Structures are given as structure tokens and as C-alpha cells.
Length: 161
Image 1 (cartoon, rainbow, N blue to C red):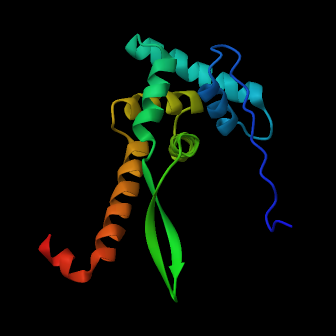
Image 2: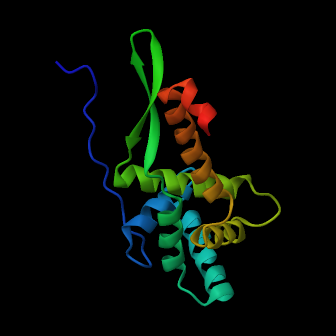
């Protein structure tokens, strides 16, 4: 008998306006208390703001932002003997997108002073241009991995830098 519960694959709905599966997942990420129509309004208003500012399609900017923010590696803790080691592990495509969308959403929620569509539009534009706080999370994550990789090689290697 298996120790863990069986994990069933999740089926995401595509969004109603563009028919894009990734955007449907992002709307689900933005959604609070099951209010999908409110989350759709926030995302579509953000796309309208992006279109007014740059004359680009909001969906193209969104896809580029998710691509720029998504990480390639994550650091997982592995217990060997009595010590814990940080081991770099490649991230699958769905997990990469989920991390990127979560980082973008968290950055938007932490900003103050504007409406959520305006904050989301600003962050998506900045992330598509490889600037902004979501990209900061990406680089922080990368340097965190790099630091633990160097420390696992030994303390003598750090002094060479």
C-alpha cells in the first residue's frame, strides 16, 4: 500500500477571451475566494493598460514576462548522513511557469498606491523588459543557488573569487 496520496493531474481552463491555457492558469493564480470574474476583469484591464502604453498586445507582453521570470533551477534540501545539503535541481515546465506567475502576483500585491490592474500592467511591462521586482526575485533565486553551489565545493574555492 503506498504511503502517499495519489496525485491526480489538474486540468486548467483556458481563459474565455483569448483561449490561452497559460493565461487561464494565471487568472486562477490571481483569483481570491473563487471570484473568477473579478480576476478576469483585473487581468483584462491590465492588458488594456498595456495596449494603451505600448501599442503591443497584452497577451504577448504577458507571455514574454512569464518567460523572463521563470527559473531554470531550484535548490532542494537533501539529507545525507547527519547534514543537509542544498542540491540544485532542474525545474519542469509547469513548475517554472507556476513559480513565475506566483512571483509576479506577489510583487503586484505588495505594491501600494495603485489599483491592481495598474500594478499588474506595470509589473508585466517591467518583467517583459527584464527589469522590475519579479526579475529581482529571479536573480536573487539564481545567486542563492550559485552561493550554495560554491559553498558545497569547499571553503578554499570561495577565497579564489
